[in-house]
Image 1 (spheres, rainbow, N blue to C red):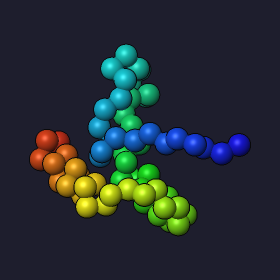
Image 2: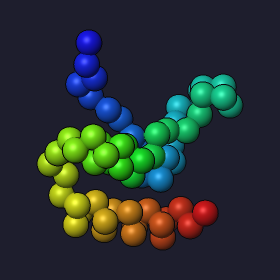
Image 3: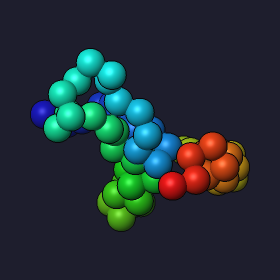
Image 4: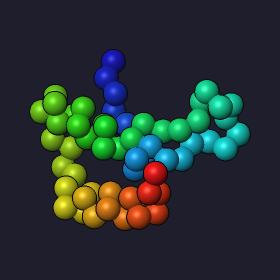
Length: 63
């Protein structure tokens, strides 16, 4: 069995508001990209657009 879809959130922010504390949060998209880069798996991500999104996320969520 293989994973067909991976879900993440910029900087890991988000999560289900109804989940218990130990279940909140998301896998950071940048960590997923790094993982797949290490596997040499081309995700066909527009890296320039992703970089802009990360910069905006840092402005919205500075910590």
